[in-house]
Image 1 (cartoon, rainbow, N blue to C red):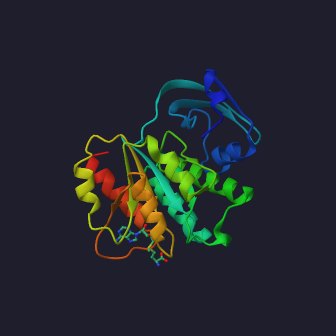
Image 2: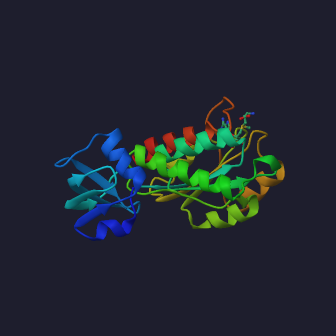
Image 3: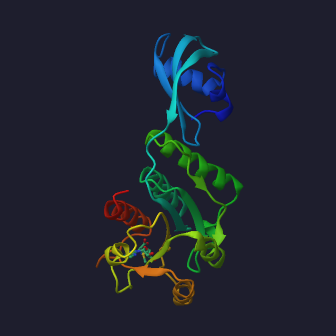
Length: 238
Ligand code: SAM
């Protein structure tokens, strides 16, 4: 991923030390080699390197196209704030699995120590960007500022389908998806280590969320959202 402004011109000059190092030293690229640059907003450009030294690279755009890698359905993951290392793991995997947006949510049973400060937020966005890059996605998923549960519910109203992952639910995700086969935007709420508080469950149902089970086993808080993303994409051919 590079600064979108760089891709507007046909001639590309790169003096970002990290990128030049990666191309020259790590990937050992030289004049004549081609790279694909992404602007993070869906545009891809094939660039042929004309010259590269220790400080800068120069090349020209050979072709521009829309980047692939995005699912047909937009999945917004409302992910409970859980222990930071587990949250980061789930965030990285959710991006690999195609989530469009990740909204960290303070559930009643999220621990105060799991709340985020600015440094943690910047780190999460970096994790999302690197995961998008390595999995060949054309867009960088946004990691939102953490929301209290009620605000997250309110933000999810634009979705065609909003689901609450809940091991106590009587309906399986499969049943709910089969009646929403044309959904194009899906909000997925996934709870913390201590589970969903009964008042939150009630509030979610009152907002029209569908409580769904992923099966008879209780999954870890970082496993459940990933299983849901995989199942949804399989069911929706996305
Ligand atoms: N105590 C374990 C932990 O530390 O991760 C398990 C926590 S489980 C209660 C966390 C969340 O994962 C739940 O609130 C729910 O959103 C989701 N979840 C886990 N198993 C599930 C299942 N079988 N069906 C639906 N959602 C599930």
